[in-house]
Length: 204
Image (cartoon, rainbow, N blue to C red):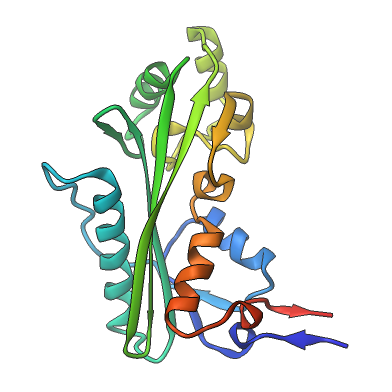
């Protein structure tokens, strides 16, 4: 017998252009549309990274919800933080090299803000995972960059790809490092009135 949860029937919009977030939701069996938000992502001085990520996720969700108010809108923003330095997406190969050099042999934080908008309800939160890198030589960094995986990745690496070989350990949610903490998202959905038993897609 096939059981279809509420999210199979609901019009769900993922407010993100990230193929990694899209893949995670596809694995849940959800049907959804992808509508990337159009807004300037601004980092505000003096704000904690967790608050920054949460605010950006809320702004992304709000931007898309304003045009898709009958849909369940999900948005996220991920940043890599080393000490007090926020590492965004590298603008060039040289910048990616510098980021990976900074991360080499150290433990950094991956923080994702998640926001949900549905009907007259909204919820948001942030998730933090600690990621430790192995010591990397310049030759090893160049070899990783040659694969092109660093492009459009916060911190210049992808844990679900070749970047998995750069990581010695993590503490916290793996999916958060990919770009969407699924447990945190699930709890937010519960918060806007969609219980866990209705969050799976098509299944037997």
